[in-house]
Amino acid sequence: MEEHKMARVLFVLFFVFCAIIPAFNAHIGDFDEVWRRRAAEAREFALQTYESEPVNVTLAFNQKTRNAVKELSQVIPKNDTRRELGTKHYDGPCMATNPIDKCWRCDPNWANNRKKLVDCAMGFGYKTTGGKNGRYYVVTDSSDDYTNPKPGTLRHAVIQKEPLWITFAKGMNIRLHQELIMQGDKTIDGRGANVHISGGAGIMIQYTKNVIIHGLHIHDIVQGNGGMVRDAVDHIGLRTMSDGDGISIFGSSNIWIDHMSMWNCYDGIVDAVEGSTGITISNGHFTDHNEVMLFGASDSSSIDQQMQITLAFNHFGKRLVQRMPRCRWGYIHVVNNDYTHWNMYAIGGSKNPTIISQGNRFIAPPDIFKKQITKREYSPESVWMQWTWRSEGDLYMNGAYFVQAGDPNWSKKHQHLYDGISAAPADQVTWITRFAGALNCKEGEAC
Image 1 (cartoon, rainbow, N blue to C red):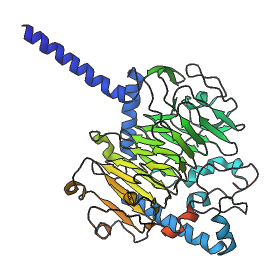
Image 2: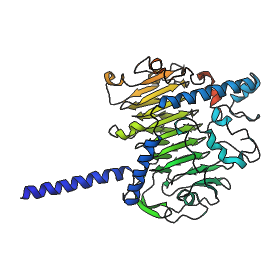
Image 3: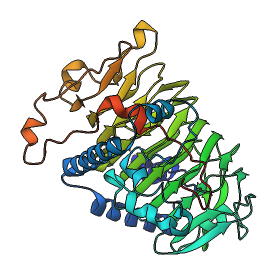
Image 4: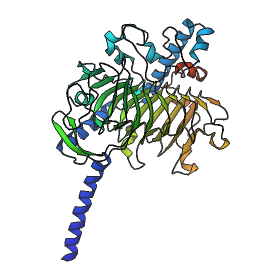
C-alpha cells in the first residue's frame, strides 16, 4: 500500500514538473489560461506561416536582390561615388544599395507614408505587415512602469490589442525595468528620432505574430529581475528572470527586424526559439558582443524544425565573437551579409539545421586557428557531414574557409525549384551593406 501511495505521489510530482518546465523556459511564472491560449494560437499561426517549399522564398529573394543591384549599379557613377560609399561617413545624395532600401529610403516624403515600409519586406518575413492596419501611436514619454504603463510610453503602446504603428515624438533613451512584452500586429518605427533602448531589459516577442521593429539602437541590455509584469491591457502575470537578450523571439511568427544598431546585450543580440518562423533580420549593424544570435534553443526542441529565417544585408562588425548565427533544426538563408570580424567562428550549429550561405563576404581574423567560418557541435563528422550546409558564391578573405556538408549537387537536384539566379555577387557586399544599422532619417528629406 505504501509503495502504491509513493508511486502516486511521484506520478503527481512528475506531472507537475513537466507542466512547470515549459512555463519556466518561457519566463512565465504563472502559465495561466491567457498564456495557454496565446501559445496555442501562436503555434497554429506558425503552421500557417511555414513555407512547405522554402527554396521558393530563397530564390525569389535572390532574384529581387540581383535585379536591384544590377539596376542600381547602372545608375550610380562607377568611380567617385563608389569610393565615397566605401568611406565611414557618406554625405552625398541618397543611395539605396539593396532592394529593401530601394523600396522606400530615397523618397523625401517617407514620413508621410511610413506604412510603405510594409511593401518592402523580403525573405521569410515577407508576409509581415506589423501595424499597417492600425492607427499611429506616438511615444512622447521615455519612462517605464511595467505594472501600470502610462499613456504615451512605449510599454503602453505595445500592450494594446489593436494594430498600431508606433513612432516617437523625439529622440529618447528608454530604460526598461522589465522585459517589454509585445502584443501582435505592431510596428515600432524609430525613423526620424534617435531612439535608444539601453541600460535595462530588452524586447520580448512571445507567442504572438506580425511584428516589425525598425530603426532603433538597442544596447547594454541586462536581465530583468522578474515579477508581476503587464503584458496586455487586460492581463498582468508573473515573470521569472529574463535572459537579457536585446530582442527575444519566442514561439512567434511573421517577424521583421530591420535597420537595427545593436551591441553589448547580456545574452543574445537577437534570439529566435520555440518554433518561431517567418522571420527576416535585415540591414542590421552588430558589434561588441559574444553570442550574437541563437536560432533554436535546445537539441531536444524539435518544434524548431518549422523555423525559417532569412539573414540578409547585415554587417557583423567589430569585437564580435561567435554565433552569427548558431542554429538548431530549421532552414536558415544567410545572404549578402558582411562578416568583417569574429573571434571564434561565424556560423555554427547542431541538430541538422539547413544553412544556405550565398553571396556573403567573410574576412577571417589574423589568428591562424580562427580562420574557419563554420562550427558543428555535439555530433561526430560522420553525422554532420549529412547536414545541408552549402556555400554558394561566398567571398573568403584573409584565409577564411567554409566547411561545407551535405549533397554538393543540392542545387542541381532542386532544378524544379531553382531558377538559376544566384544572390548578388559577394564582391558587392560592402556596398550592399553600406547603410546597415539605424539610419539618421529627417522628415522632409530622403533617409
